[in-house]
Image 1: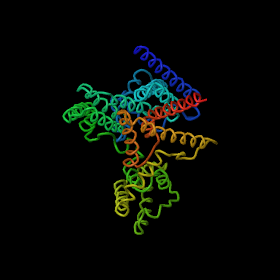
Image 2: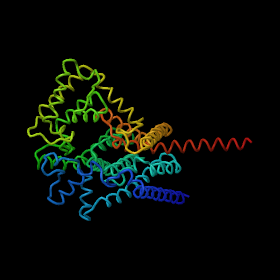
Image 3: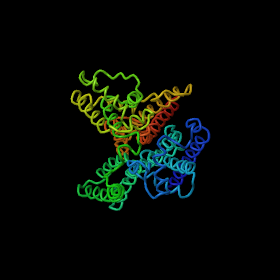
Image 4: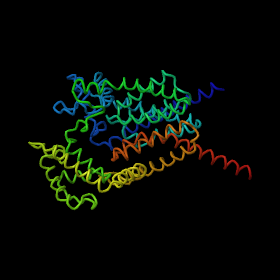
Length: 466
């Protein structure tokens, strides 16, 4: 009987993988050319991952921009090293990256099915895996040479690892630590996987000495695996960069623009709109509470100065770099504006933007920029609406499966991502919420399975009565 059940589960997983694989091939062939009309492989961030791989291969230096110091610290190196390996096999890596990512993302559907099936039953796995196979916000990234597909796979694999049902041995704790380090080296915010890992360690071990031993072994191994990156930055390039440079290796993200965005993040979740207006000298109507009366004139002079000699803001506005930079002066000016705002509106600073971000992270219903194609805005709104419904079903599934320890692992990861992006980063890109959204597909499958079972039971009872 056990062998029959195991065979049936294996058959389920093969079918889910095949279905997800088919969806991604169809997307690649028929939908991606319309969504990514310039290139189905290239994204605005692609160069910052591909260039380090090319330069490492060509000149032996990991940098996204040979003439720019911050290029040495452009990104944590995990995804670029993946591209470097492919670079050794073929010149045109992009189709190969897409092909590998199709396989990886199809595997993610299988991992989702496994975890949902473990938390409930086979049908929940079917539903969760099937939903992810067709999930449009995951399909969007499959062909693009950026790390979002790999990041999602690492996040779900991490949840699968930490949802174990018995206390980890010291060898497993060491693997946990190495895995957390490898994930963080691929996308730095995956360090948030430490939270579900800690929940797993704490709930599986009832003795404090065992908890500390597990955390200690995992932490030590994790530091050993992660340390070559900051060590390289400090020893070779004499700069202690733990994750990446503040500019991420982009010239336009220089200190003047970083400080301006930091100030704007204090009072608005849509910093890009105001940054565009400052950089392009467009009409700028700030909310009344942002500047005090005595600051207003000084702030608008700062904006003018930014357009004259701010490296990042000039580049952002489509101008050439200034002959002489005044970035230090501008950075200090924006920092003073931010500090003044915090002093005048401490509660508003602490909660207004983060809560608006948190609301948006769950209930986003439109694109940041107007769609160019007729009907596309409507389609995007419908997809965002479906996403919200799916998230709410996922939260219902967490409640239904609340007695399962795996449910806590999934819940703390999803909420840590939403809270981190909303309160700490204070600016949202939907791609950075993808891993949390996908994690909630797991309990969504459980909730849908519960609803189907409830409906079929009531329907059967009604038939029997008649």
